[in-house]
Each structure stands twice: as C-alpha cells, then as structure tokens.
Image 1 (cartoon, rainbow, N blue to C red):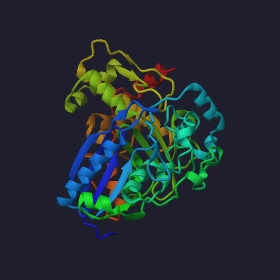
Image 2 (image 1 turned 135 degrees about the horizontal axis):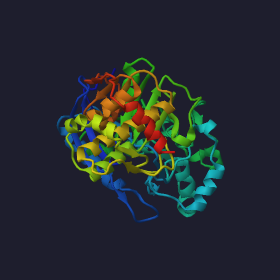
Image 3 (image 1 turned 30 degrees about the horizontal axis):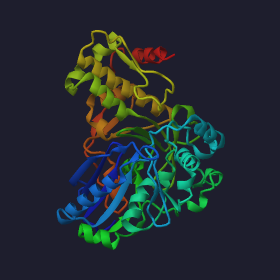
Image 4 (image 1 turned 45 degrees about the vertical axis):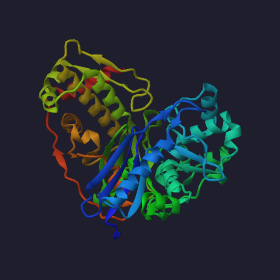
Length: 455
C-alpha cells in the first residue's frame, strides 16, 4: 500500500465529468466538483469538448491542491473513445462522440474487415461503440487528417498523457469491445495490422503504473507536483474494489449511463455476440464475461416521461403492477442490450397511476438486468453499485427475479474509488444494504408473459 493520504481522481463519464479527492484511510470522497460532458456538433464530426473538460479539470485540481490537498492523480473514463495525436502531442483529429453513426458504405466496409468474435470477444456494436469502427471511419473518411496521426491512445490514457507527456495504452480500455484486443492472448488483435496502425499504437502500460510527475507548466498552474497513474476504463474501475476484496464467483452490476454486468469467475465459452454479451478485461489483464444495456439512459428517459415518484410509494404497488400485467417491453434506448431489434411499448398501462408506471419501469430494468446476468452465466451474490444502488424498488425486484442475494453500495459510483486503488490506497469496504430474495406473488408468470410479448 502507498503512503498517499489523499488521491485526486479525474473521472470522465459519458454524461458527466468530475474531479474527486478520496481519503486513503476511509475511502470517503472528501471533495468533488462536477460538470456535464458536452458534445460539439460542428467540425469533421460530433466530438467531445476536450478543451472545456481540460479547463474544468485544471481548475478543480488547482482548488483541491490547496484544500483538502492530494498526493497523486489517477484517471478513469468511459470507453469507446480514442485520442489521435500528431507528432507534437496535440490532437490531430477531434475525439469522436461514440454515438455518431457512420455512412452505410463505411459500415459495410468495416463489417467486411473486422475480426471474428472468437478472436476479440467484441460484438459488432452500433455507431462508434467499437473503437476499431471509429478508426476505420476516421482513416477512410478523412485521409488528409489521419495521415498526421503519430500516436493512438485510449481515452483515459489521453488524459494521463496530457498531464505527464507520457503516451500509453492500457488493457481495460483496449479490452472493452474495441475489436482491437484479443483477451485470450492478452495482445492486440489482427485488426491493428488490417488497419495498418500498429506502429501508431502507443506502448501498453499497466493501469497501476505511475507514468510520471505532472508536467512543470501544469504543476505551476495547479500549485503542486504529484505523480499521475496510467488510468483505467470506468466500468473496470468499478469492478476493481470487488476483485480485491471478494472471492469468486459473484456478479457486479455497475450502473451509470450504461448498466455493465460482470460475471466474475465465469468463462468466455457461452457468450452470444448478437445479444451484447462480450468479454471485458480487468485491471490485472484477465478476461471477464460481461453484458450490458443502456439502462441509465433508459431510466432518465422513463423518469422524464413518468415524473418524480417516491420510491416507497412505488414499492407499495409492485404486487398491483404484477397482478394487472402493467409492463414495459424493450428497448427504450435502441442499439444495445440483450434483445436487439425490439421496439419499446407499454402493455396494460392504460389508466395506470404514476406510481404503477414507475414500478413497472423498475421491473423492466430488473428484467433486463436479469437477462444480462443470465447471458454471462453469473453465479453467486450480486453487487449493485452506482445510481441504481439507491433504487430499492429495482433492487428488491432484481433479488426476487434472480433468486440471489443482492447487495447495494449506495452513494457515488465506484469508479472513483476503483481508480484511486491504482495508486495503492487500501481498499475500503462500503456500507452494503442487503436484499434477500423474497417471493412476489405472480412474478414468475409475469416474467413469462414479458418474454412471450416480445415474440
């Protein structure tokens, strides 16, 4: 373990960015600043507002250097993003928004050249959710700009490079459905040679590596010189504290914009690429069977449609929802998840109260999570972290559907604590709230009808 008293974490999610300071002794977040992560719609293609994020990060680090202080910086970001740098270390092309869709001819050409699922364990995802698809698009649609690219970096490592001047790539970011990684061999896939970019891929470093001190001009600006750690993909940051402190098998449901499910202790032999099951790579370089759907985005959409509802009031009407057959079918947010091609619709919701519709929405999310866990053969207890850990309606339904003990880790997402672990702080157990499986009358029949309704 390190001697650091406090770790600053730059945590850039798809929806929001934040800078957090964690206390090494308690694991508590003792300071935090947040900002929305916006997309710029002009230029070559939609892209992230990198300079605004950079200004936000520096301002927060400067403030926190004075109070409460920190001894190191670690980084975690969403996946499906890469930074393309020129010979001077500047962005040669904007960091593309992964929700941008490419022309059909570009997509068809990429489908013909990407490696098989048996090599990469990356399913073919929509838009730019495969980084390989992004690079193929950027190279073929903008050849004049792409020729200036000297280094290709995964997203978390772009920020560590900007802070230290040291370029790197890292396995958790390469192993999250990029098409660029072979999780069985722990090396690049054949795609890097197909795209002729191997010589531009930055050296691979461990997430646990300290890349160096912040650059002198940055140290002068923020008022402190500290080491910067290589960084980690956000869902794998959420997974890391559990790998350190819990014996397999178990499942982790990491919630944010995406609901990412990890079957720790499972294997890769039964994954269905067509249903958004895949392999992730953990901080130690090991493949982990995983599945996902855009549950956080869906919950935002449903909450905007239904309105605010007290969780206790929603729990009180669960049995009524089941008896009346009020149900929501996938997919509220299209383009991902275990039921591809399905179009969302309500059944039996005419005249339903707001509380009933909210409870049915939570039941929908629990059914989607259960389906995802089944796809990866998840066994043992289920740990839910992130925003859904505050939703007791969802948690009680998930436990009832799966028949497994479910433990909630309320509060902020585990990404920041996981990223802080890279710097060697002692893992701290969060306060878990347990939900034991309980029988809900009619729930098995409701679940069966939900599946039949999708046929």
